[in-house]
Length: 244
Image 1 (cartoon, rainbow, N blue to C red):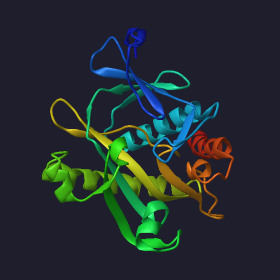
Image 2 (cartoon, rainbow, N blue to C red):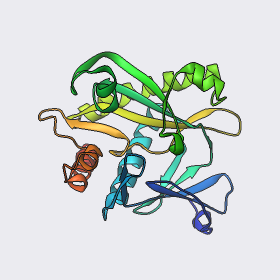
Image 3 (cartoon, one colour):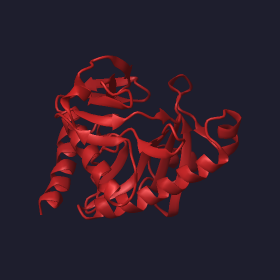
């Protein structure tokens, strides 16, 4: 990627974990991963030096791996320790959550203990709206709010389940259990949907397959400590397989 793509420094959006900048190409954006750790819709906050580097490495690695299996995404390439270039898309304001094991809010909603395996993956949709607390939506709600068409909802579900199968296999090779994870998708100018945002321990629940030790953002949510060490271990395992 030519350096001219990095010539602009105009910040166009800042989220909890990332910043988006314009580049010289209007169809390409620069993403900068921050060291910020947040939980509970930003109510809990800390800054952990090195977190942005690890999330950038892990997310880029997973996007590249998914591309090898025919899953298109906005990711182009990693351009620095904390930055990557991505295709500009119109983000669908839905978080697509896939659950393989009972944990988090699902445990609270259905009254099951964390760690119970599900007979089949569950796909959930959440409205990306901080003011409303990112509420759980069904398909009627999505239609009411005109967030996505029926065709797009089906495609989001199919893509999420395909990605789930690929990630389960990916993480199992490094002795990690994919408990659940969040995806976001965007529309390209031609209307085609592609994977966007990031895939990292910030957006996935990952447990060690042997010990069930949490290797994800729950270490921050639940005051367990050792978040950076857990993220580093996830990257070490991914990188070790890559180098093998």
